[in-house]
Length: 265
Ligand SMILES: NC(=O)c1ccc[n+]([C@@H]2O[C@H](COP(=O)([O-])OP(=O)(O)OC[C@H]3O[C@@H](n4cnc5c(N)ncnc54)[C@H](OP(=O)(O)O)[C@@H]3O)[C@@H](O)[C@H]2O)c1
Image (tube, rainbow, N blue to C red; front, side, top):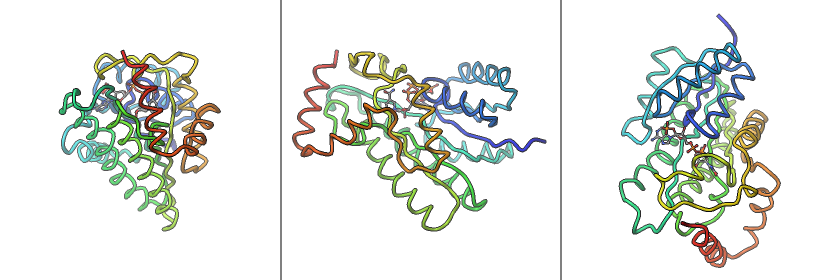
């Protein structure tokens, strides 16, 4: 029996989620790894177990499916896994003209980025509040700070995550729940999300404009463990988040729209 804390990371099979899992295992957390690709999760589980000697539990799940959040929660309860730190990181992106993009894909994006995140947060926030402690980190995006033509459902989904998380952080603090809630808003980050043929048009973003997944994950965990409600990683992203607030929404949307169209292939 150990006194180790346990973290649950969705979207742990790749990118920022795999880095969250590695950092937390390095901080002596047991980790519950959730995503669709079981082989990738098993690979990561073996690596973390060998490197850090922590317990890893692999839960393959498609979070776009109905009742996915409840099933995930029930599985953790069946396995007696007490989650101290929840990271809602799983997410997907589609670039292109809204009317051209497949509707089912857009619905799946909303199901994962918005619905699953909300339901998983509800289920775990309740049980954390009952215990009087816990941390929740929801992955939003710099995209949340603006309307983005040609990435409009994605940006709107991330605006939801930011607004929902900021409000929930205040609620949980106001009722002295002992649960801290944080939104992480990364800018461009070098993961397969920046280069995924399954997500509509490809964006040609120069590598110099991207942070590494490790840097982003480190900033997220640091901010979450210190109880911040919003974390924008990196100086350039912080400047962008401040500057976009100086523009009228109408002008900003026009500028961002032409930038995205110039970067779409
Ligand atoms: N990369 C960026 O520039 C950037 C910027 C701002 C915010 N973000 C946000 O950061 C988070 C992580 O993205 P990333 O860049 O690390 O992307 P990524 O490398 O594409 O990883 C996405 C993760 O989400 C999982 N996932 C996707 N659909 C899923 C589903 N239906 N059910 C369960 N898991 C699913 C994927 O695993 P499986 O395929 O195995 O299911 C994968 O582990 C996302 O929320 C994203 O919106 C990224």
